[in-house]
Structures are given as C-alpha cells and as structure tokens.
Picture (cartoon, rainbow, N blue to C red):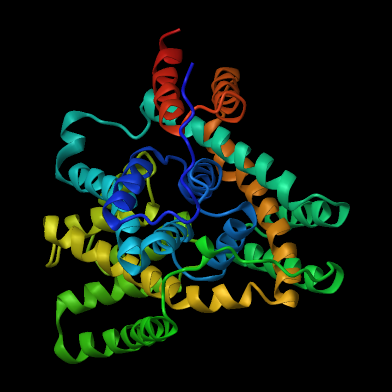
Length: 405
C-alpha cells in the first residue's frame, strides 16, 4: 500500500530551491497540455500540499485565463511567488519549463535520426492519462464550486458556449457571463483571506513589471527597424506572440507559424516536425519556441537561439502575472468581486468540462482499450490516491503493452 505524504503546513515558508525541485517533477510528468496542467497543479498544491484552497486556486485560474500568455505557466509562476516571492516564481517557471525545453532542443539536434516518433504507443499512453487528470479536476472542482442549481447551470452553459464558439473568444465570453451572473444573482460574501494566500509582490514591483511589459511591446519593433538587428527582430516576433495570444497552448502555434514560416526563417516541414514533438513532451507547449529558435535559418540559432526565443516568448507571461498579483490579492476580498468570482469559478468548471471532451478526450481515446486505461488511471488517482508520477509511468507502460496484445 502506498504511504500518504503529509501535507505541508499553510504557513510554512519554502525556498526557491525546493520550489524548483517540486516544479521540476511536475515538468517531467505533466502531459496533456494546459488544461491537464491545471489538474496536475490542483492535485499537487490544493489537495496534497495545501498551499491554497480550491476557491483561491480557482480565482487564480480565472485571473490567468483573463491574461494573455500560457495560463498554466502563469499559474505555476503565481504559486511559486506565493511561497517565495519573485525568486520563487522564477524557480517555479524554470523547473516546470526546463524538461520540455531541453527535450525539444534535443529533438532539434537529432531525435529524428534515432527514429523517435511522436506517435509512439507509449507516448499515446501518456496522453491517455491526461483524460484521467482532467476528469479528476472536473469532479473535484465541480463538487466544491458548483454546489447549487444556478452555478451548475452556469458550468453547463459555459461548456455549451465553448462548444458553439471553439476559440479563445468563446472562453472569454463564458467567463464574462459567469462574472455578470454571479454579480447579479449570487449573494455577497465576506471571506477571510488566510496569510498563505497573500502573494509576496509589492505594488511598486507590480507597476514596474507592467511598465516594462508595455515598454518592450512598443519599443522592440521600433528598435529592430531602426537598427536592422536580426536578433532584435527575432526577439520581437516571439515576445509579441507571447504578449498577444489569448488562450495559450495550441493557440500559439498558428501565430508562431505566421512569424517564422511566412518570414522564411523556418521551413514548413521543420515546423510541422517540431509541432509533433511538442505534443509528445510534458510541460508547457510554449517551449515549442526553444525548438524553433534552434532551427532558425537566421542568427541566433542552435542551442543559444533556442534559449533566446524561449526567454522571449515567456517573458510577457512572467511580467503580466507579477504585475497582476498584488492588485488581484486585494480585489478578491471585495464582497461584490467575490460574488462575480463565484460565478466565474462555476464557468471555469464548464471550461474544464469542455476541454475534457475536446481536445483531451478526442485526441486520446481511440478504442475501448484506451478507455480502459483511462478508467484505470482515473480510479488510481481519484480513489486510491496514487501520485500522478506513478500513474503517468503506468499509463506509458500500458500504452506500449496494449499494442502488443
């Protein structure tokens, strides 16, 4: 029988080094894209470590869905900041991002020479576990955040909106609807904010982050044009993509293609090969930028080019979430804001439910054996309380074995 790991005390301070190792493990095992990452994070930091409660976590998810950039990475940065300030946020980002970034850099340098395929059976098994992770998140968050008829209806309405309008704008519409319904029909509540949900970022630092974000957004294209620097032009392309994409995840791929393929910096076949590899590795899909940077036909490229583009595409996400946290921390305690947030929380459950079907279910469940593996993974996570690391390993082995049967 597996031993339960005791939860950390809410007031316990954790250094950046420990945060790095916690997120490094997640970065190595978090398959399934940004929606699945939300489930992994909830399991790790709400249920296991008790860093924050379900309500505060869902508020954080709602904030990151409102901001441009990779939502799951921004949630990770915020969680690291919660325990160790801005250094903790950087440590969380580095740990969560490093495994997939290094994997894609290695792929760029020769994974194809060894015949590794993104369609391998064991990789498909890892995608199946994402179904179980998201289903567990929908189950747990639904019971907590949709306890009455109105909020359950909001969750269903959000799912239907996303089905009818499958884009980032559909998600934004659902969130706005939830906020308006909550503001109008959910009675105000006064919540005590425990000490462990106060993010260690000053308002001065937050304002500086937003000024820096906007300054780079407007200055980089001008500087690239005036200097003729290819490095600045490349940084501007990836920074602008990270700044302006809503929805994160797969939404960034067509935007990146417009930037690097249509400009002639990357061949379309190389782009598509990297796209397949990016879906087969854990962690944030934005690390696709590391692959693209390494195969650019212009300088910088190679390993340094990959790191250069990786920093460029993630920098806006870091600045935006650091800039938002102190003000969000205050706003969420206002009674009318709490009413709106409870409505938003219900719609977030609906968004997760929609994502459980598409893309998580539709890209993973292809047969009854796939469904069987997903059910086993769900049962182990939900009822036997296995750690996601072990379930991910089991699903990978199961995916490989079922091909041989």
